[in-house]
Image 1 (cartoon, protein in one colour):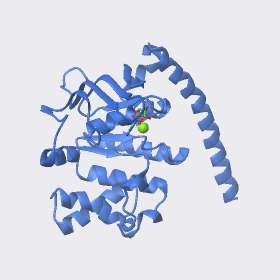
Image 2 (cartoon, helix red, strand yellow):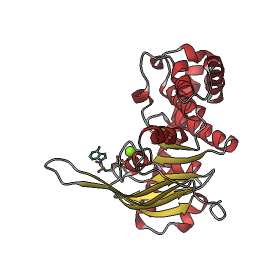
Image 3 (cartoon, rainbow, N blue to C red):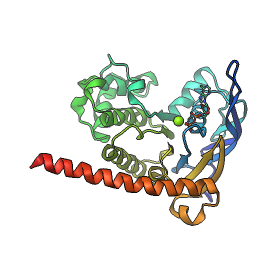
Length: 279
Ligand code: ADP
Ligand code: MG
């Protein structure tokens, strides 16, 4: 995949430092170089505080880099403003860990999904309403959920609605930042299955960020391992165990193994509870 195509997104020597009054500055990103290729899912894994969200925020310009460059196709997007920033944000969508943070509690789900279609003038009212119904069904919700308020949906359903809104504008890249981390194990798997389905059906490229290596490995083609603000290595997801060189990656791999066992155990228990309840 990476041989014959130029990247859709590229980070060149990106540095991000947070200056806090009276405290030592935090170097969240140190000289980060990364590329995302068309149609690829690049996973980013690393423990909490390793700089994963800072990377996502710098790409979408929710934060500004201190130095370095970010390129989207042939355009440098490191410091965009106004209309150019707005247009870039349509192309690069983001899905966060906590869907509840981005909902307006008084806005119905249908309007939440429809809003960007209208704002970006992608379609007119009736067509956008029609498209919203299709999007809801596409992500495994029902068209009638359009009339519900966010609090009437479960966490997993809310995240589906957020994904519907993100894919609605037909972005070229979607960044998922711990998008499944707040969900129960079985719901998490359903959302991962949905993401893999979307990948098979569309040409969208994605960055999938998680602290959980086993989860990242399921959906990603390549995995960038982050440690203390640096990308320590980028590995082929399918050949992770044979190609990992860095000691930090190896320690992530062994903790992922024990976490996998724990999750399997929890899933078994969930199944037993469901069975017991259905008797
Ligand atoms: P991750 O997503 O991998 O957990 P973050 O990118 O959120 O990591 O954080 C990287 C480092 O930057 C951490 O030390 C964190 O405390 C710090 N940091 C993140 N955001 C801010 C901020 N807005 N102000 C100050 N420090 C921050
Ligand atoms: Mg984070």
